[in-house]
Image 1 (cartoon, rainbow, N blue to C red):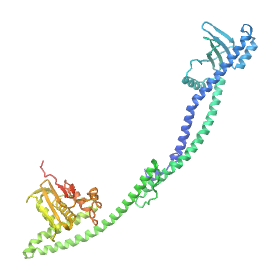
Image 2 (cartoon, one colour):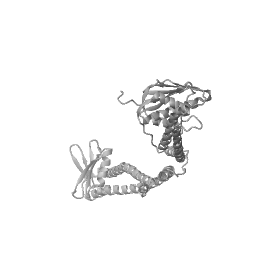
Image 3 (spheres, rainbow, N blue to C red):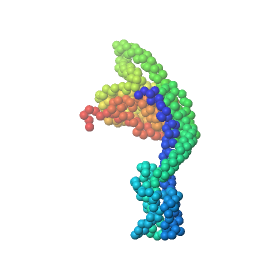
Image 4 (cartoon, helix red, strand yellow):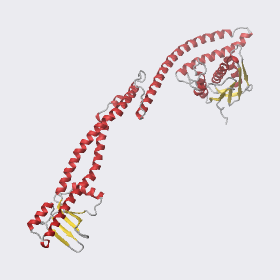
Length: 466
Protein backbone atom coordinates (compact mmCIF):
# COMPACT_ATOMS: atom_id res chain seq x y z
CA UNK A 1 0.00 0.00 0.00
CA UNK A 2 1.39 3.40 -0.99
CA UNK A 3 2.02 6.26 1.41
CA UNK A 4 -0.62 8.36 -0.37
CA UNK A 5 -3.31 5.72 0.19
CA UNK A 6 -2.35 5.38 3.84
CA UNK A 7 -2.50 9.14 4.35
CA UNK A 8 -6.04 9.40 2.96
CA UNK A 9 -8.60 9.25 5.72
CA UNK A 10 -12.37 9.34 5.91
CA UNK A 11 -14.62 11.14 8.36
CA UNK A 12 -14.57 8.33 10.91
CA UNK A 13 -10.78 7.98 10.70
CA UNK A 14 -10.40 11.37 12.37
CA UNK A 15 -9.38 11.19 16.02
CA UNK A 16 -11.61 14.14 16.92
CA UNK A 17 -14.72 12.56 15.35
CA UNK A 18 -14.01 9.28 17.10
CA UNK A 19 -13.61 11.03 20.44
CA UNK A 20 -16.88 12.89 19.89
CA UNK A 21 -18.80 9.68 19.10
CA UNK A 22 -17.15 7.75 21.92
CA UNK A 23 -18.05 10.52 24.37
CA UNK A 24 -21.72 10.42 23.32
CA UNK A 25 -21.74 6.63 23.52
CA UNK A 26 -20.16 6.56 26.98
CA UNK A 27 -22.56 9.16 28.37
CA UNK A 28 -25.56 7.29 26.93
CA UNK A 29 -24.27 4.08 28.49
CA UNK A 30 -23.92 5.81 31.86
CA UNK A 31 -27.40 7.28 31.49
CA UNK A 32 -28.81 3.82 30.74
CA UNK A 33 -27.11 2.38 33.81
CA UNK A 34 -28.60 5.21 35.88
CA UNK A 35 -31.99 4.73 34.17
CA UNK A 36 -32.37 1.14 35.37
CA UNK A 37 -32.65 1.86 39.13
CA UNK A 38 -34.58 5.05 38.36
CA UNK A 39 -37.15 3.12 36.31
CA UNK A 40 -37.34 0.44 39.01
CA UNK A 41 -38.03 3.15 41.56
CA UNK A 42 -40.77 4.56 39.29
CA UNK A 43 -42.39 1.13 39.07
CA UNK A 44 -42.17 0.60 42.83
CA UNK A 45 -43.75 3.98 43.58
CA UNK A 46 -46.51 3.33 41.03
CA UNK A 47 -47.38 -0.01 42.61
CA UNK A 48 -47.19 1.41 46.16
CA UNK A 49 -49.60 4.18 45.17
CA UNK A 50 -52.11 1.65 43.90
CA UNK A 51 -51.68 -0.55 46.97
CA UNK A 52 -52.07 2.44 49.28
CA UNK A 53 -55.22 3.54 47.43
CA UNK A 54 -56.60 0.01 47.76
CA UNK A 55 -55.73 0.00 51.47
CA UNK A 56 -57.59 3.29 51.98
CA UNK A 57 -60.58 1.92 50.09
CA UNK A 58 -60.56 -1.15 52.31
CA UNK A 59 -60.40 1.02 55.44
CA UNK A 60 -63.48 2.93 54.29
CA UNK A 61 -65.45 -0.30 54.61
CA UNK A 62 -64.82 -0.38 58.35
CA UNK A 63 -67.60 2.20 58.81
CA UNK A 64 -70.11 0.11 56.87
CA UNK A 65 -72.35 -2.41 58.69
CA UNK A 66 -70.81 -5.87 58.53
CA UNK A 67 -68.24 -4.33 56.12
CA UNK A 68 -70.77 -4.69 53.30
CA UNK A 69 -71.40 -1.97 50.69
CA UNK A 70 -73.47 -1.75 47.59
CA UNK A 71 -72.14 -2.93 44.28
CA UNK A 72 -72.23 0.64 42.95
CA UNK A 73 -70.09 1.93 45.85
CA UNK A 74 -67.70 -1.03 45.52
CA UNK A 75 -67.15 -0.28 41.83
CA UNK A 76 -66.65 3.40 42.63
CA UNK A 77 -63.99 2.57 45.22
CA UNK A 78 -62.21 0.24 42.77
CA UNK A 79 -62.25 2.91 40.08
CA UNK A 80 -60.88 5.56 42.41
CA UNK A 81 -58.12 3.20 43.54
CA UNK A 82 -57.44 2.25 39.88
CA UNK A 83 -57.53 -1.45 40.73
CA UNK A 84 -59.72 -4.39 39.69
CA UNK A 85 -60.16 -6.22 43.01
CA UNK A 86 -58.97 -6.14 46.62
CA UNK A 87 -58.75 -9.07 49.03
CA UNK A 88 -57.12 -9.72 52.38
CA UNK A 89 -55.42 -12.99 53.21
CA UNK A 90 -54.73 -14.51 56.57
CA UNK A 91 -53.35 -17.82 57.68
CA UNK A 92 -56.66 -19.68 57.38
CA UNK A 93 -58.93 -17.66 55.15
CA UNK A 94 -59.27 -15.27 52.20
CA UNK A 95 -61.62 -12.31 52.53
CA UNK A 96 -62.80 -10.56 49.37
CA UNK A 97 -63.00 -6.88 50.36
CA UNK A 98 -63.72 -5.32 46.99
CA UNK A 99 -64.79 -7.96 44.48
CA UNK A 100 -64.15 -7.38 40.75
CA UNK A 101 -66.89 -5.72 38.76
CA UNK A 102 -66.54 -8.39 36.05
CA UNK A 103 -64.87 -11.77 35.63
CA UNK A 104 -61.07 -11.53 35.41
CA UNK A 105 -59.81 -13.48 32.41
CA UNK A 106 -56.32 -13.37 30.91
CA UNK A 107 -52.73 -13.91 31.94
CA UNK A 108 -51.73 -12.86 35.43
CA UNK A 109 -48.38 -12.18 37.06
CA UNK A 110 -47.84 -12.32 40.82
CA UNK A 111 -45.71 -9.69 42.55
CA UNK A 112 -44.77 -9.94 46.23
CA UNK A 113 -43.78 -6.45 47.37
CA UNK A 114 -42.63 -7.81 50.72
CA UNK A 115 -39.93 -10.11 49.31
CA UNK A 116 -38.84 -8.33 46.12
CA UNK A 117 -35.12 -7.48 46.07
CA UNK A 118 -33.37 -4.46 44.53
CA UNK A 119 -31.92 -6.40 41.58
CA UNK A 120 -35.16 -8.30 41.26
CA UNK A 121 -37.12 -5.05 40.90
CA UNK A 122 -34.77 -3.95 38.06
CA UNK A 123 -35.36 -7.25 36.27
CA UNK A 124 -39.13 -6.97 36.77
CA UNK A 125 -39.04 -3.42 35.36
CA UNK A 126 -37.36 -4.58 32.15
CA UNK A 127 -39.81 -7.48 31.98
CA UNK A 128 -42.73 -5.05 32.31
CA UNK A 129 -41.52 -3.02 29.32
CA UNK A 130 -41.62 -6.19 27.22
CA UNK A 131 -44.82 -7.63 28.75
CA UNK A 132 -47.71 -8.82 26.51
CA UNK A 133 -50.83 -6.67 26.25
CA UNK A 134 -53.80 -7.45 28.52
CA UNK A 135 -51.82 -8.96 31.37
CA UNK A 136 -52.93 -8.33 34.97
CA UNK A 137 -50.84 -8.03 38.10
CA UNK A 138 -51.58 -9.72 41.42
CA UNK A 139 -49.71 -7.55 43.96
CA UNK A 140 -49.29 -8.67 47.57
CA UNK A 141 -48.31 -6.21 50.34
CA UNK A 142 -48.66 -5.78 54.11
CA UNK A 143 -52.28 -5.99 55.31
CA UNK A 144 -54.17 -4.15 58.06
CA UNK A 145 -52.93 -6.39 60.86
CA UNK A 146 -50.15 -8.73 61.88
CA UNK A 147 -50.07 -11.84 59.73
CA UNK A 148 -52.47 -10.37 57.23
CA UNK A 149 -51.61 -9.76 53.55
CA UNK A 150 -53.33 -7.35 51.22
CA UNK A 151 -53.85 -8.70 47.70
CA UNK A 152 -54.58 -6.23 44.92
CA UNK A 153 -55.39 -7.10 41.31
CA UNK A 154 -54.75 -4.38 38.76
CA UNK A 155 -54.13 -4.04 35.02
CA UNK A 156 -50.49 -3.85 33.89
CA UNK A 157 -51.17 -1.68 30.81
CA UNK A 158 -51.12 1.70 32.71
CA UNK A 159 -47.81 0.75 34.35
CA UNK A 160 -46.30 -0.29 31.04
CA UNK A 161 -47.48 2.93 29.39
CA UNK A 162 -46.14 5.05 32.23
CA UNK A 163 -42.77 3.29 32.15
CA UNK A 164 -42.55 3.83 28.37
CA UNK A 165 -43.31 7.55 28.73
CA UNK A 166 -40.80 7.81 31.57
CA UNK A 167 -38.13 6.05 29.48
CA UNK A 168 -38.84 8.37 26.55
CA UNK A 169 -38.36 11.45 28.77
CA UNK A 170 -35.14 10.04 30.18
CA UNK A 171 -33.91 9.29 26.65
CA UNK A 172 -34.56 12.85 25.47
CA UNK A 173 -32.84 14.31 28.51
CA UNK A 174 -29.95 11.86 28.09
CA UNK A 175 -29.48 12.83 24.46
CA UNK A 176 -29.44 16.51 25.33
CA UNK A 177 -27.02 15.97 28.21
CA UNK A 178 -24.75 13.63 26.24
CA UNK A 179 -24.62 15.91 23.20
CA UNK A 180 -23.89 18.97 25.34
CA UNK A 181 -21.23 17.17 27.39
CA UNK A 182 -19.74 15.65 24.25
CA UNK A 183 -19.46 19.08 22.64
CA UNK A 184 -17.71 20.51 25.70
CA UNK A 185 -15.38 17.54 26.02
CA UNK A 186 -14.83 17.58 22.26
CA UNK A 187 -13.78 21.24 22.30
CA UNK A 188 -11.44 20.64 25.23
CA UNK A 189 -9.93 17.61 23.55
CA UNK A 190 -9.51 19.56 20.31
CA UNK A 191 -7.57 22.27 22.13
CA UNK A 192 -5.58 20.07 24.51
CA UNK A 193 -5.05 16.83 22.57
CA UNK A 194 -6.12 16.72 18.94
CA UNK A 195 -4.48 19.88 17.63
CA UNK A 196 -1.13 19.22 19.34
CA UNK A 197 -1.24 15.65 18.04
CA UNK A 198 -2.09 16.91 14.55
CA UNK A 199 0.99 19.14 14.60
CA UNK A 200 3.16 16.25 15.71
CA UNK A 201 1.59 13.90 13.15
CA UNK A 202 2.00 16.42 10.32
CA UNK A 203 5.64 16.90 11.22
CA UNK A 204 6.24 13.14 11.17
CA UNK A 205 4.46 12.77 7.80
CA UNK A 206 6.45 15.65 6.32
CA UNK A 207 9.67 14.10 7.56
CA UNK A 208 8.75 10.70 6.10
CA UNK A 209 7.86 12.12 2.71
CA UNK A 210 11.03 14.15 2.22
CA UNK A 211 13.56 13.73 5.03
CA UNK A 212 16.46 15.02 2.97
CA UNK A 213 15.15 18.51 2.32
CA UNK A 214 12.89 18.62 5.35
CA UNK A 215 13.11 21.84 7.35
CA UNK A 216 12.52 21.96 11.08
CA UNK A 217 9.11 23.48 11.91
CA UNK A 218 8.05 21.78 15.14
CA UNK A 219 9.60 23.52 18.12
CA UNK A 220 9.83 22.37 21.74
CA UNK A 221 6.98 22.99 24.17
CA UNK A 222 6.70 23.68 27.89
CA UNK A 223 4.00 21.03 28.34
CA UNK A 224 5.03 18.27 30.72
CA UNK A 225 2.36 15.70 29.88
CA UNK A 226 2.72 12.79 27.44
CA UNK A 227 2.00 14.94 24.38
CA UNK A 228 4.52 17.54 25.50
CA UNK A 229 7.18 14.90 26.05
CA UNK A 230 6.43 13.39 22.63
CA UNK A 231 6.67 16.80 20.94
CA UNK A 232 9.95 17.62 22.69
CA UNK A 233 11.36 14.21 21.77
CA UNK A 234 10.35 14.75 18.15
CA UNK A 235 11.89 18.24 18.16
CA UNK A 236 15.16 16.75 19.47
CA UNK A 237 14.99 14.04 16.81
CA UNK A 238 14.47 16.72 14.16
CA UNK A 239 17.65 18.50 15.18
CA UNK A 240 19.64 15.25 15.34
CA UNK A 241 18.36 13.97 11.98
CA UNK A 242 18.89 17.33 10.30
CA UNK A 243 22.48 17.38 11.54
CA UNK A 244 22.90 13.77 10.40
CA UNK A 245 21.72 14.62 6.89
CA UNK A 246 24.02 17.60 6.74
CA UNK A 247 26.92 15.45 7.88
CA UNK A 248 25.99 12.75 5.36
CA UNK A 249 25.99 15.34 2.61
CA UNK A 250 29.42 16.57 3.66
CA UNK A 251 30.70 12.99 3.79
CA UNK A 252 29.31 12.31 0.34
CA UNK A 253 31.13 15.35 -1.01
CA UNK A 254 34.27 14.29 0.83
CA UNK A 255 33.95 10.79 -0.62
CA UNK A 256 33.74 12.15 -4.12
CA UNK A 257 36.84 14.25 -3.53
CA UNK A 258 38.74 11.30 -2.05
CA UNK A 259 37.75 9.14 -5.01
CA UNK A 260 39.17 11.70 -7.42
CA UNK A 261 42.35 12.07 -5.36
CA UNK A 262 42.78 8.30 -5.18
CA UNK A 263 42.33 8.02 -8.92
CA UNK A 264 45.10 10.55 -9.52
CA UNK A 265 47.21 8.98 -6.77
CA UNK A 266 47.00 5.54 -8.37
CA UNK A 267 48.16 6.99 -11.68
CA UNK A 268 51.06 8.73 -9.92
CA UNK A 269 52.03 5.59 -8.03
CA UNK A 270 51.91 3.57 -11.23
CA UNK A 271 54.38 6.01 -12.77
CA UNK A 272 56.58 5.69 -9.68
CA UNK A 273 56.41 1.93 -9.96
CA UNK A 274 57.68 2.13 -13.54
CA UNK A 275 60.53 4.31 -12.30
CA UNK A 276 61.37 1.75 -9.63
CA UNK A 277 61.55 -0.94 -12.31
CA UNK A 278 64.11 1.22 -14.12
CA UNK A 279 66.11 1.69 -10.93
CA UNK A 280 66.29 -2.07 -10.46
CA UNK A 281 68.78 -2.21 -13.35
CA UNK A 282 71.21 0.12 -11.54
CA UNK A 283 74.57 -1.30 -10.42
CA UNK A 284 74.71 0.88 -7.30
CA UNK A 285 74.60 -1.45 -4.24
CA UNK A 286 72.63 1.12 -2.22
CA UNK A 287 70.04 1.33 -4.96
CA UNK A 288 69.85 -2.45 -5.15
CA UNK A 289 69.15 -2.60 -1.39
CA UNK A 290 66.53 0.15 -1.48
CA UNK A 291 64.66 -0.99 -4.60
CA UNK A 292 62.85 -4.00 -3.02
CA UNK A 293 61.70 -1.84 -0.11
CA UNK A 294 60.59 0.87 -2.54
CA UNK A 295 58.66 -1.65 -4.62
CA UNK A 296 56.87 -3.02 -1.55
CA UNK A 297 56.03 0.50 -0.40
CA UNK A 298 54.60 1.37 -3.83
CA UNK A 299 52.58 -1.84 -3.96
CA UNK A 300 51.12 -1.13 -0.51
CA UNK A 301 50.37 2.48 -1.50
CA UNK A 302 48.53 1.32 -4.63
CA UNK A 303 46.63 -1.27 -2.57
CA UNK A 304 45.80 1.41 0.01
CA UNK A 305 44.39 3.72 -2.66
CA UNK A 306 42.35 0.85 -4.11
CA UNK A 307 41.05 -0.22 -0.71
CA UNK A 308 40.13 3.36 0.19
CA UNK A 309 37.93 3.50 -2.90
CA UNK A 310 36.32 0.24 -1.82
CA UNK A 311 35.80 1.59 1.71
CA UNK A 312 34.04 4.62 0.24
CA UNK A 313 31.64 2.14 -1.33
CA UNK A 314 31.11 0.49 2.11
CA UNK A 315 33.23 -2.51 1.19
CA UNK A 316 35.91 -3.86 3.55
CA UNK A 317 38.93 -5.30 1.72
CA UNK A 318 38.86 -9.09 1.63
CA UNK A 319 41.49 -10.80 3.71
CA UNK A 320 43.99 -13.18 2.11
CA UNK A 321 44.85 -15.38 5.06
CA UNK A 322 48.29 -16.97 5.10
CA UNK A 323 51.25 -17.45 7.43
CA UNK A 324 52.80 -14.06 8.24
CA UNK A 325 56.22 -13.24 9.66
CA UNK A 326 54.97 -11.00 12.44
CA UNK A 327 58.31 -9.58 13.58
CA UNK A 328 59.38 -8.59 10.08
CA UNK A 329 55.95 -7.11 9.24
CA UNK A 330 55.95 -5.02 12.44
CA UNK A 331 59.46 -3.71 11.67
CA UNK A 332 58.38 -2.59 8.21
CA UNK A 333 55.22 -0.99 9.60
CA UNK A 334 57.23 0.84 12.26
CA UNK A 335 59.65 2.11 9.61
CA UNK A 336 56.74 3.59 7.65
CA UNK A 337 54.98 4.98 10.73
CA UNK A 338 58.02 6.58 12.35
CA UNK A 339 60.04 7.37 9.23
CA UNK A 340 63.79 7.70 9.13
CA UNK A 341 63.89 11.20 10.67
CA UNK A 342 65.18 11.86 14.15
CA UNK A 343 62.56 11.17 16.81
CA UNK A 344 62.37 10.88 20.58
CA UNK A 345 60.20 7.77 20.31
CA UNK A 346 61.93 4.49 21.08
CA UNK A 347 60.37 1.36 19.62
CA UNK A 348 60.99 -2.09 21.04
CA UNK A 349 59.88 -5.09 19.01
CA UNK A 350 59.78 -7.93 21.55
CA UNK A 351 58.32 -10.43 19.10
CA UNK A 352 60.59 -13.38 18.56
CA UNK A 353 62.45 -13.25 15.25
CA UNK A 354 60.64 -15.47 12.80
CA UNK A 355 57.44 -15.49 14.92
CA UNK A 356 54.67 -16.59 12.55
CA UNK A 357 50.98 -15.79 12.85
CA UNK A 358 47.95 -16.44 10.70
CA UNK A 359 46.39 -13.47 8.90
CA UNK A 360 46.63 -11.07 5.99
CA UNK A 361 50.10 -9.47 5.80
CA UNK A 362 48.81 -6.20 4.34
CA UNK A 363 46.05 -5.95 6.94
CA UNK A 364 48.47 -6.59 9.81
CA UNK A 365 50.92 -4.11 8.30
CA UNK A 366 48.31 -1.35 8.04
CA UNK A 367 46.94 -1.98 11.53
CA UNK A 368 50.41 -1.92 13.07
CA UNK A 369 51.48 1.20 11.17
CA UNK A 370 48.34 3.06 12.26
CA UNK A 371 48.69 2.06 15.94
CA UNK A 372 52.39 2.94 16.04
CA UNK A 373 51.78 6.28 14.29
CA UNK A 374 48.95 7.12 16.69
CA UNK A 375 51.11 6.28 19.70
CA UNK A 376 54.01 8.41 18.43
CA UNK A 377 51.72 11.37 17.77
CA UNK A 378 50.13 10.98 21.23
CA UNK A 379 53.51 11.14 22.96
CA UNK A 380 54.52 14.19 20.91
CA UNK A 381 57.83 15.96 21.24
CA UNK A 382 58.56 14.68 24.73
CA UNK A 383 58.87 11.22 23.25
CA UNK A 384 58.49 7.93 24.99
CA UNK A 385 58.57 4.20 24.34
CA UNK A 386 56.44 1.95 22.18
CA UNK A 387 56.72 -1.72 23.01
CA UNK A 388 55.42 -4.49 20.73
CA UNK A 389 54.92 -7.89 22.37
CA UNK A 390 52.84 -11.03 22.05
CA UNK A 391 52.96 -14.08 19.86
CA UNK A 392 51.10 -16.04 17.22
CA UNK A 393 47.69 -15.48 18.83
CA UNK A 394 47.83 -11.75 19.53
CA UNK A 395 50.03 -8.67 19.36
CA UNK A 396 50.04 -5.95 22.03
CA UNK A 397 50.93 -2.35 21.21
CA UNK A 398 51.90 -0.49 24.42
CA UNK A 399 53.00 3.14 24.63
CA UNK A 400 54.11 5.33 27.53
CA UNK A 401 51.99 8.27 26.44
CA UNK A 402 49.45 10.28 28.48
CA UNK A 403 46.54 7.96 27.69
CA UNK A 404 43.37 8.55 25.71
CA UNK A 405 41.13 11.50 26.69
CA UNK A 406 37.60 10.78 27.85
CA UNK A 407 36.03 11.92 24.57
CA UNK A 408 38.19 9.53 22.58
CA UNK A 409 37.32 6.62 24.91
CA UNK A 410 33.57 7.24 24.55
CA UNK A 411 33.76 7.30 20.75
CA UNK A 412 36.49 4.73 20.23
CA UNK A 413 36.41 3.02 16.80
CA UNK A 414 33.75 5.48 15.57
CA UNK A 415 34.82 7.26 12.38
CA UNK A 416 34.99 11.06 12.57
CA UNK A 417 34.45 10.95 16.33
CA UNK A 418 37.26 9.09 18.11
CA UNK A 419 40.28 11.21 17.26
CA UNK A 420 42.14 12.90 20.12
CA UNK A 421 43.79 15.37 17.74
CA UNK A 422 42.08 18.56 16.63
CA UNK A 423 42.82 17.87 12.98
CA UNK A 424 42.22 14.12 13.16
CA UNK A 425 39.32 12.33 11.52
CA UNK A 426 39.16 9.27 13.74
CA UNK A 427 39.15 7.01 10.68
CA UNK A 428 42.38 5.18 11.56
CA UNK A 429 41.05 3.07 14.43
CA UNK A 430 37.77 2.41 12.63
CA UNK A 431 39.59 1.18 9.53
CA UNK A 432 42.01 -0.87 11.65
CA UNK A 433 39.20 -2.64 13.49
CA UNK A 434 37.43 -3.37 10.19
CA UNK A 435 40.64 -4.88 8.84
CA UNK A 436 41.09 -6.99 11.98
CA UNK A 437 37.55 -8.29 11.78
CA UNK A 438 37.93 -8.98 8.06
CA UNK A 439 40.69 -11.43 9.00
CA UNK A 440 38.47 -13.04 11.65
CA UNK A 441 40.33 -11.31 14.48
CA UNK A 442 39.65 -8.30 16.68
CA UNK A 443 41.21 -5.00 17.71
CA UNK A 444 40.42 -3.82 21.24
CA UNK A 445 41.55 -1.32 23.85
CA UNK A 446 42.96 -3.21 26.85
CA UNK A 447 43.79 -0.28 29.11
CA UNK A 448 44.60 3.42 29.03
CA UNK A 449 45.66 5.98 31.60
CA UNK A 450 48.45 8.29 32.68
CA UNK A 451 50.91 5.41 32.45
CA UNK A 452 50.14 4.74 28.79
CA UNK A 453 47.80 2.85 26.49
CA UNK A 454 47.61 -0.79 25.42
CA UNK A 455 45.86 -1.98 22.26
CA UNK A 456 45.59 -5.68 21.43
CA UNK A 457 45.32 -7.15 17.95
CA UNK A 458 43.88 -10.65 18.21
CA UNK A 459 44.75 -12.84 15.24
CA UNK A 460 42.59 -15.63 13.82
CA UNK A 461 43.67 -19.16 14.68
CA UNK A 462 45.64 -21.05 12.06
CA UNK A 463 43.83 -23.87 10.25
CA UNK A 464 43.88 -27.01 12.35
CA UNK A 465 44.78 -25.12 15.54
CA UNK A 466 42.66 -25.74 18.64
